[in-house]
Picture 1 (cartoon, rainbow, N blue to C red):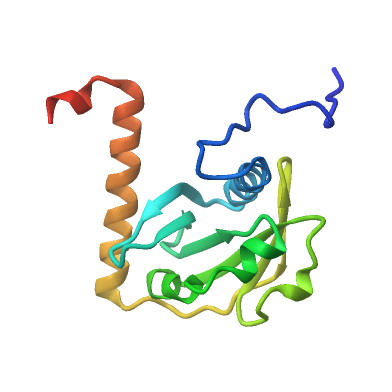
Picture 2 (cartoon, rainbow, N blue to C red; picture 1 turned 180 degrees about the vertical axis):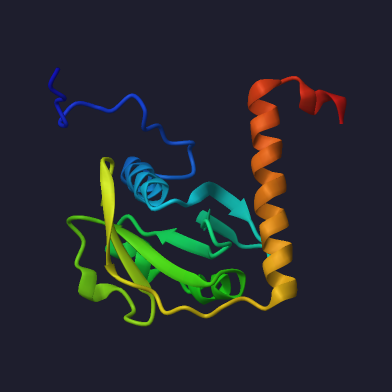
Length: 161
């Protein structure tokens, strides 16, 4: 069976906070991370009030944050991206295939993605988290994942709170 990539993909759906382009990038980044052995969560609220587009946990406990930028205007209007660096070992931007990669700050990693996959074109520098912050972020990832899974398995469980 062939897939017509020009048709709307029923798996990609915007949650109202993101464009179709951002949702496609998110899916491609998630696929790449999964194939590299990372477990990832989307839209994760951090202790500093920021919300990471994609946060991933690797097999060895490494923590990555990927900030999705769907257009040059989206990137240029973002002045908060450095606030994520205190919550990860590596920070990357993910952009669509038709966006100029030279626009992205060279101090960050860079991923180019579409709905079908992604590729790291510039690896982010590693800046390991301090042990206490690593524990806090890992617990945040674990609890958030467990709560989301529980809500999916029992959508009425939240009414018990």
